[in-house]
Length: 107
Image (tube, rainbow, N blue to C red):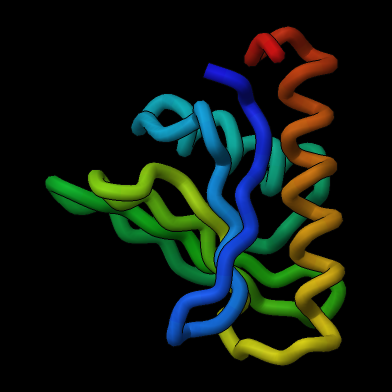
């Protein structure tokens, strides 16, 4: 399966899914890139039996990394607004680029 991102709008606003990176281990890879490579500050983390999420803040913008068994791993803004959508889209693309460049995932 090709690793890319899928953007869609739900009732909560923009959500960005990491296509091809749906597993628990993939969540940890994405989490590490956000925390270590981009120095996103972890606000809250929850590891449940069926799902997990982590809330981050970077450049004054709060967002979540979610893992759900039905959709896999995705990013969404904590407070949805149009002006931060582009920031989140670029962040997701940059995460994917780092994972590919490091060889953590194949294209």
